[in-house]
Image (cartoon, rainbow, N blue to C red; front, side, top):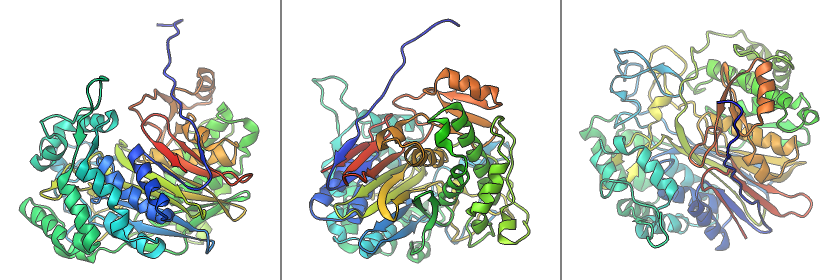
Length: 576
């Protein structure tokens, strides 16, 4: 009905300010775990590793020791940045014919590739990649931390062993996946202990149920005592391999023993005026973030005003073209050739920018030609379209008293990963096989020991060479535009970090332009008149249609830390 007005839900959170150290995370207990380590004298890497392990306990449907991730580090004493890549790898037995296409047809997964028979690359024991989280976090701690693995694991072990009061956020996510969790008895035993999700507090006189994960606590204790070898070569590996062999899985003992994370001493980086943005190289979304920033830099968005129709139009068109290139070209560089240097070239960004009409949307815009900026002819490109985008991830950031910075994103793939808990371990495994094209002969087709093209893009920002900001987000492909716009909100429009991460956003990766319902109707009308095919999405406490960014910023005037987190869910900043 027209002519009606209604009550609108408005959510807000305060910006946290502290002089010494700060941690931001997607759950209060994640941030508190990192802060606990900082208060014990640990540095930013110590705190980040502790928070990441804790995240796998208190937000177990998003990340965990059965997952994978990326981490960007700024070492302030050395004035250098590093990336720790602990993404997953396919088992050696994986190949282009590992999965049979569903004879009924259809599409599945976030790239819109053909559906697989029995959803075997999404759910069950054939869906996981070799997990990288334990090895990656341990390596980061060894090279850049100051504390022992057993020390930083203390909060996670305590949360798992003693439990924590169930909250609405965790209970709701368990309830959403309840039907699939019931298909796996070991998983149901952990997350549906009485056949239903543990109950949060709903009345003042009824306390929340305490959620305990005793098997996971014992697994974490074993890692604390024996290090990552317990997971990749020892008794935990025995449990994983036994379960895989009994249930038709692909991961073998050799796959686990072979796994190694990677440290990049030269991250991906670009300049944005007097700022430097540092991101992850390799088959993640760092390259797409850098490309977006390079294109946007030349528009002078500030003159149009924050979230004006003109600014949002140019941001959407920039995102559309960067995603077109992402879908067309990117895959594991060990297996497929891609124009990595061309995509991050400022000259190529200027070329792409010239194709954007300042007054009209181009919903069908396709990929550009970054190859010529490498002096090469473009080979055949990938046949990829944007499918549904159900990925679930977590992100955390840390800045310590010495102004070391960390930005870390960790994931299981989709909500609850492959929905499988390895018996007797409490370990929920990822479903990273969904990131691969089940058809042979394509850049992202399955092969043994191959890395997936993932969406994670943790980032750091320097200002005139000094540490300035840690930023990142979960949210599948939408996290890329969330990080992109959060950075623009600070660097271009001068917003504080809380306003920057909680402001309404747009997301554009194809013909449609998704827009937050909090964007004023008048602005949306102008965008529609410019030719944008708008999809308006209402944000609620349970929705995260535009990513869930969190960040920490160092105020250059007084050196204080400012923490900001998205408003929809229980993300929290903790400082001291």
